[in-house]
Every structure is written in structure tokens, then in C-alpha cells.
Length: 464
Image (cartoon, rainbow, N blue to C red):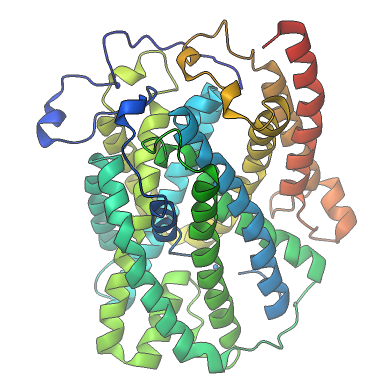
């Protein structure tokens, strides 16, 4: 994509500014390219532990168990492949994901997505903690999780990787216990309640929206790995770190949801209160309380990347915003999603469902355009990227093809989306009266077809 805002950072090496926050020794590295001598993170397996921790937390549509099972497998494989590909960009170029994209509009969209996910996550965490003691209000849990997340995010890349190295373990243990205590109640014979195709498509869009959200920050967490790192290992461990935990947690969630037919007391209406009801019933309130504390605080691991990356994106949406330390933007972002999450607690379920689908719609064009640029127009070679010209708009692609194609993707979204507030004509053709949601698929295909044509023309006319 093209450059819309040249950033003058001649006076700064890594986006540093002399502010009081530096006294706390927080990371001051911003959006500037990471030089080769600073890329000292050698462990490829940290790509697994990082993403495994991030993906520990997840809910479900009117699909039968096996329809839901295969939907989870297929759509998570697709989105994990996208994240794995984009993760290789960081080590190869030393550039953050949004710097590679280099469009203010996309950076702004990324800010909305990361703040939205942070809101979703902390409310679920607050619900879980409320399940321990109903006298502990959800807003208080939201506040605790938000504050702890912000502290870790302030200290940056290396501290985040160290934290995520171990943060996934307690979550997996909690869900292993949940699996063991609920599996004999699962109703695997349950059929889809409405049109199977419509339910699968809508559920699949939500699944993709959850996992693919990391594509817009994937390179942020590999920029300190050496440029000669094995791209295969980075991609493999990133894929496994996304695919394995998401699939496991979502299948356990699917099974637990199906079990409410046999255990109606578990059907508490929200993800957080459901898991609390299940654990209280199956392992006793004492041990359940301990597990729920672990689970509620695990949201921190899920939210830390959002908090960190939102600060980087904020530095890109204006010419001089990079001069404000990344840590301050992280604090501002945390204040925004803390406020929104507390205000949205009472309408959380509908907000969550709609948000997941909208994310999938937007990510379709993004993945199509960035993926096509790398695979088709850069010949899958990072030698065709020059990090040194990241601030030279006269040497970068114009971005007109990308912007037009993104718009075409949005057109595809409107034709294929099926929401309570709007149903596209193609969605209605699939299933009436509510529609089969193909908004993500059409947004991806429309953007891809458009970009292959318009980028070829743009490159031929401009040479870049």
C-alpha cells in the first residue's frame, strides 16, 4: 500500500522523546525500522508461546456440534496461515505491520479493531471474576484487568515476550479441567437449528474474525528476530501458536455450549458466567474460584499485544504523532477501551457478535491486498522490500490500487453480509429470511480480483 504521511524523525533514532515516562524504563522504541544489530531475539519457538498465550480466551451460533467442529478447524486453519505469513515480515524487514502497510486509513481501522478487542476481552474477564463472587461487580474486574494489562504493555516487546512465554500454561490447564469435567455431557448429536449453510457461514465469519485479527499486528512481534532467521520456523511456530490453542478452546466452548441441553443450569447467557457456572458445578466452588481467578487474569495475555500495537498505530495516523512516546499512546488507548467496556457491559452479547463479524469483513480486503502484494507483485521475496525507503513516498507505491481495491472489498461486504440491521442481496439468495453471511468471503474475493488488475496497471504506469 502507499504512503500517506511522511514522518520526520531525523532527531530520533527509535521514536524516542525525552519524557518523564522514560524514568520508568518503559520501552521507547516506536515505528522506526529496527536495525540489524538490535535484532537479538534468537528463539524461534517464542513465536509459538507468544501466540499461544494471546489466543487463550473465546463463543456460538445455531450450528450443530459437528458442523461447528469442522467450521472451527477450517476457518482457524485459514486465518492462522494468514497470521503466519505476515509474521515473517517483521524479521525480514525490521518493520512493524502498519509501517509495511503505510496507509493512515488502515492504521486508523487497526486502532479501532485493537481497542474493540481489548473491550471485548476485559468484559469477558470481568464476567469470569464476577462468577466467583456476584458481589464483585463486573466493572471492577474490568478495571483490574485493564490496569495490569497496561503496566505490562508499557514495558514493551521483550517484556511482553517473556510474559507470554508462560502465560498460556494456566489457561490451557483450566480448559483441560473443563474438558475433562464436561465432555460426558456434550451433545454431539445436536443438529443445526436453522439453515445449516447459513449458520456455518455466519459462525465461520466470527471464527475467522477472532483469529485473523492478529494479521494487522503480526510483524510487530518478530521485528527483533534476526533478518536471517528461518522464515519457515517463524511461520510454523506462529501457525501452531494460533491454530492449536484457538481450536482447542473453541471446541471445548462448543462442547460446553452443547451440554446446556443436558445441564440447563450452565446456560448463563454470557461466555464468562457460563464458564463460572460450569466450574462451580463440576469441581466445587472453592477450587472453581481459584481456576476462575487464573482464567480471568489470563485475559491480560490476550490484551497485551492489543495495547502495545495500538500505540504503534497511533503514531502513524498523523505526521507528528510519532513524536509522542509510544507508551503514552498505550495509556491513552487503555483509557479509551476501559471507558467503552464499562459503558457496554449491559449490551455486551449483541456488541460482541456484531463486532466479530465486522472485523472479519474488514480483514478480508486487508489480507487479500497485502497477501497479493507479497505473493504476486513482490514474487514472495523479501529482497524486493527496501526498509530504508519507508519514509520516501516518492519511492513507494502510490497506494491508489490498494485504496480502490479496499473499497471494492467493502462493496463485496455489503452484498454478502447478513446482520440484524442489514442483509445483502447475495446473502438473501443463500438463505431467507435472515441470509447466509458471505460478507467476509466476498470482501476478500472482490478486493483480491480488483487488486490484481489495478496494481498491475499502477505498477506498469509508475514503475513502483
